[in-house]
Length: 426
Image (cartoon, rainbow, N blue to C red):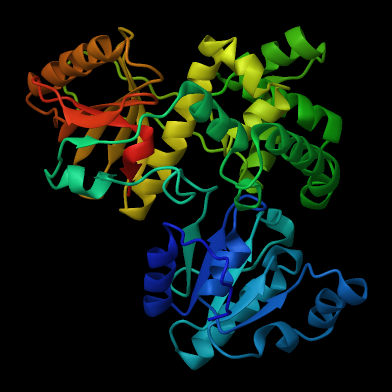
């Protein structure tokens, strides 16, 4: 492995190692600066960095002339930012086919090339995908991980006291976000770093990913998505929001095109709707819940600060929900699961649903403080009863309320778990 004594283990490490054991190559994809390169190097014995600026991007120029410069080296070999030379993808696939070995390459990248410039082959069966996200609180060591998502699905849960976390601390963690490079920054400096990040996304990275898109308009789309963080805002809603707040007339289809580019840049993380296989007349919604890849990006793009959020806990409630759902997404993925939300035609909803590969699922409501725990628990029990009354409904394995400021993980008398976000882990 490429040595790095500062490396903080990531939840996807086990997945990368497993995929290298069963596939010829692994594709590690995620937003810029989320730690892909460090994680990929951690699993490799050599590497080739296509975006290295040394010698006027000598590495990229050499690989364009002859791809062997990128391919030849001790295995596993990392080819970093492969999307700068999409032909490398097919070269890796061909090499894997010819040699028939496992664990040859890791390809890491922060965007997907346009279809007309991308690889000729999907890589199915040769290049296994692994998705990275920004760091969860467990990975940044801000959660002790004493409550394991995997254990909850196995029926294991123990009442566990933890150190009480203040509201100011929770807001600070959300403002800081999960970018590894920001972990040592105070909230003010982290917000400044994220402001630079957002500007770079729109005015430096966007032209390289899709030169047909206007950077200023992309910033307006980002701001609108930030204002609609953790909501079910459609493209039409986003278009109206941009007209109201930025005085820019933009069609819903155009909003969709910009969102598609953000998806290619790994900067959005929409949370799909969940259907518990109800046969009854209950209409289950299909609209995804909107998220940027990390709530810190939404905070920065909206021009918010820790002090402003302390004065506006209604707005912070949506951002805290995004923080918890970011972490649940990471933990679910590590266990082979997926994150959803539930909402039916009568307005009954579940903030987060984790579904495992075998169809088992768990229901989570998310509340910043302790005052609404009783109401949220009751809401979960009502939906649980509705599903259990349906012959085709598959009830959840457990019900849980995730909170920011409770000082213990515990099981209520009605069976609902209460979990501090600073105790949750994979």
